[in-house]
Amino acid sequence: MKIEPDRFLRDLHALREFGASGVGKGVIRPAYSDADIAARKWLAGRMEEAGLRVHFDPVGNLFGLADGPSILLGSHSDSQPEGGWLDGALGVIAGLEVARAAQEAGGPSISVVSFQDEEGRFGVTTGSAIWSGQIDLQTADALEDDKGNSFAEARSQMAELAGDFVDPAQFKGYVELHIEQGPALDSSGEQIGVVSDIVGIRDMRITFNGQQNHAGTTPMHLRQDAFQALSAFNAAIADRFANVVTPSTVWTIGHVALHPNASSIVPGRAVFSMQWRDSDPQRLARMEQIIRATAAEIADQMGLSVDFGTLLGLEPEAMDPTLQAALEAGAEAVSPGKWRIMPSGALHDATNVARLMPVAMLFVPSINGISHAFSEDTKEADLVAGLEVLARATAFM
Ligand code: HGY
Ligand code: MN
Ligand code: MN
Image 1: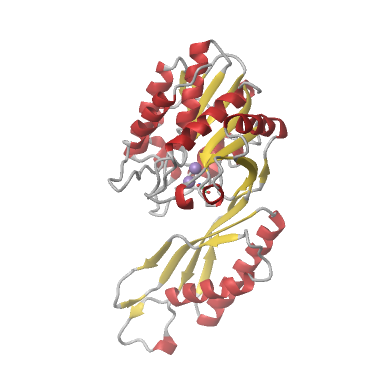
Image 2 (image 1 turned 135 degrees about the vertical axis):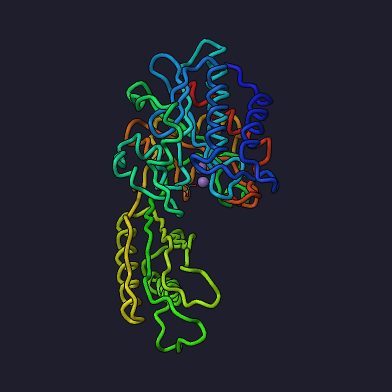
């Protein structure tokens, strides 16, 4: 099999044009946006030209299928609301290049996938979570994005393309190339990370309900201010986590919606996302207890009520030792002495796919460790090294 780095880089840049932000190489291509759907149709065309059978499933996961039992390569092509050009795209386009080279060489049998809504506009890695049975379609259909649009409405935009769910039994394993999205490889000067395991996550929407009122006439001691409750919660939670977390535990309040969000109105409602990640499910559960108890206590003290949304989550997942060994051999051949075995602090579709088949992952460095931002980037030589490791490893699978 002969991969063509130039063709791979051209396709990677072509995908970037869909939803190009105009700021650096950034993209705005959230799941089911016009840019996302257009990108998926373009990708489908590239898969077809490569000799693969194109198949969209009921939620917009896009497969390029090779005949016979095959290895599945890929990632996702949706982005965060402000995203980089490589998060997900790299794994999809590298998978396309390896599958195309394999078709040209007459083997091995390699299929490609671009999962839908990995970035969690609606859930957590929604498309692969549904395909793997992690969440059922009916439950997923009721999920809403931050603006109240339902998953059912969103996926109906791709209904005319949709076939059945793909039978996972045709795949021998799944391998995902991704950017690291953190600082480890960039700061050590290494070129490849072979992933040992992916952390677990919990994600829950929380709402403080207070009393909307006049910001000039309502005395401070009579307010039921939803933002003040959120602010107190944020400070308290850091204190209460202190004896529970490790240096690699993380938590984030990344989305906040104040109602009605006006300078002269005491906010009556604060809806916010609470997300936490760790490699130990028991620690994740302990953190959940602390979150619920702290929010309830603060609401009580300040005369508000609190509602908790559906708890979404994925368990920590170890990679398959045989596939991981193939990636290690590929890494040593392509970047001798310049690779390491490492955990993934970001989530990936591989976590879900592990319910269906053996999975493995590899990383290339992120410049300055930046991702989920327009400035996300990776040196071209590192992108190509990742492609080469992926291609070599498939020969051992
Ligand atoms: O949030 C994550 O870890 C992934 O990039 N969706
Ligand atoms: Mn990603
Ligand atoms: Mn991401």
